[in-house]
Length: 152
Image (cartoon, helix red, strand yellow):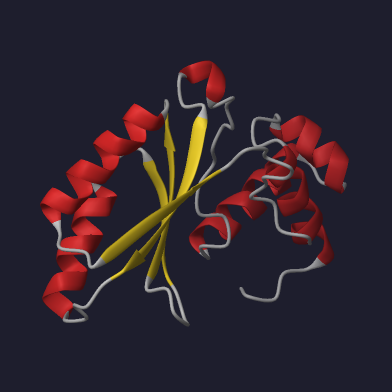
């Protein structure tokens, strides 16, 4: 189901905007009945096109006002090191994204913490769990755009 039709595309766009809409509202938006809308959503979920539904929140209001990007370089590239690194980063709830990169950088980590002390605690926990050769961090001063919506 990699090729979705126009109705599925409109349905995914509407759900990306607001996944909490009722089936009635979604159906009106895309021109389907409530049941047809539900069947299409289920088919999109079964095809792993829709992989989850989330709520976006104001991180600062919940005590996570500092967003940090950690640039990681390592001298270890063995599968067992990668498994240890993956397990360590997945277990840290402050870490929102981990990416293996091309070029000079090995990994990029995106995390949310309360403040610099929170970053330092995260950094200390990470280096205790897995050996890293170099970690540098960049702190977000202003968030200009943040979205998970794909331009369908």
